[in-house]
Image (cartoon, rainbow over all chains, first blue to last red; front, side, top):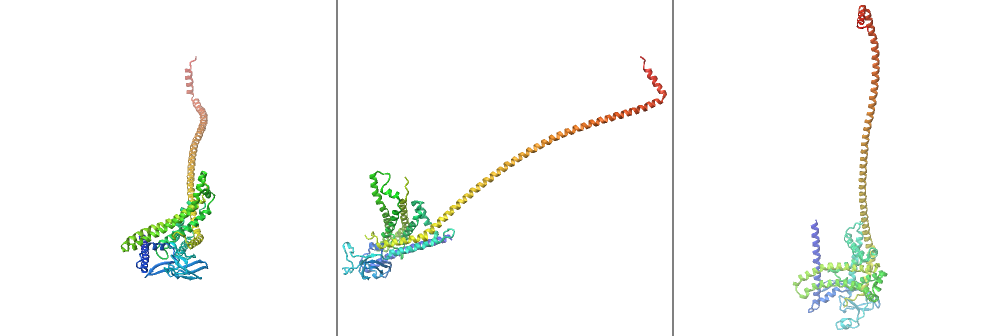
Length: 371
Length: 164
C-alpha cells in the first residue's frame, strides 16, 4: 500500500515536471516561429522575448497557433483627462507598436511596449502614432493606467486561491481542534510563521498584533512566487518579481515599522546612547538612512531574486533558438529542470526572508530599552 | 529601464489586494486557525500538567502507603513485644502464685497432719490407757483368781526382795 502511494507521488512529480518543461519550451518555440513569420530574416531576439515575459502586459498570452496569438483579453481601465475609460485590450488587436488606435470617450489611445499613450494626430514613418523622442522613448502623454493587466489578473487569482485554501483550512478543524484535510498541511506553515518568525523576532508580548500581517505577507509572496514558476496559463506571470509589487509590500512593512516604533527605537536612531556627541550626530545620519534602506533592501531582494529566476529559466530554454539546433535541447531541458528545482527552494526561501526581515524590523522598532 | 520603475496601476492593485487579503484572511482564517492551535496547545499543556500532578499525587500516595505500612509494622512489633512481655509476666506471676499457694497448701496440710497426728496420738493414748486398764483388770482378775500363784508370786517377790 505504502509503496503504491509512493509510486503514485513519484509519477505525479515526474508528470508535473514533464508538463512544466514541455510547455515552457513550446511557449518559447512558438514565440520564435511567430517572429520568423513576421520577419523571415529577423534574428530570434532573446532579450526581447525575456523582457516581454518578465514585464506586465495588457493581455494574457497563452500560446501561438499557426502564427496567430492566442491570448486572454483583459480590461483596460484608464484615468484620463475625460474621466474613467474602460475597454477590453482585445481592441488593440495584439498590437504593441502604437499602430492601432482605440477611440473611446472622445480620446484616441495607442499601445506601445505595453504602455498606453494618447495617440498623436499624425502617423510617423514607422506607421505608428507615437512621437519618438530621444533614445527611442515615446514623448506622448499617457493616462493613468489602472488596467487589470496580466499581473493584476495573476494577483486576483492568487488572492482567490489564498482565500479558498485558508478559508477552507479554518473550517477543517474538528470540535476538539484536530486538523483535517487541507488544515493538516497549512497548520504547520502557520505554526512555523508563528513560532519561528513572529515570536523570536517580535517577542511573546507583542507578536499577536503582527501575526496576521506576517502570515498574509508570507503566503501572498509565496503563492505568487510559486505561481510564477508554473509555466502555463493562468500562471507563469512574474508578479512577485515586479518592482511595483515588492515596493508596495516593502512600503507596508516600512509604514508598520515607523508607526510601531517606540521611544527607545527613535532614541537609538537620532541620539544613539553611549556614544560621544560627534559620533551621535554621525550615527543619526546613518541610522536615519537605515530606516529607508531596510525596506528598500527588502524590495530589491525579492524583485531581483524572482526576476533572476525567470530570466535564467528562459535563457536556458532560449539556448535552443540561439544555437538553432535541437541537439542542445537536452542540455537546455536538463539545466532548466535543475534550475526549476532550485527555484522551488528559492521562492520559498525568499518569501520566508521577506517575512522574517519584516518581523525583525518590526521587532527592533518595538524593543524595550534594556540598558 | 522601465523594469525598475513601479507602475502606478500595479501599485494600486497590489495595495488593494493586500489590504483585502489581510482583512478577510485575518477574520476568516488567521484568527480561527491561530485560536484553535493556541487552544489546543493550552489544553495539551494543561493535560500534561494534570498528568504530572496526578503522577506526583500517586507518588505521594505510595509514599504515604509505605509510611502507613511502616507504622503498622512498628505498631505490630510493639504489640508483639508487649504481648510477649505480658505473657512472661503472666507466667511468672502464675508461677509465683502457684508457689505461694502450694506453700500455703503444704503448710495447711502439715498443720492438718500435725493436728491429726496429735488427735491420733491422744486417741491412741486414751485407747492405750483403757486397754491397759482393761488388761490390768483382766490380769489382776486372773491373778487374783489363782491363790497359789499369788502366794508363790508374793513369796518370790519377797524372796527377791532382800531386806536391806
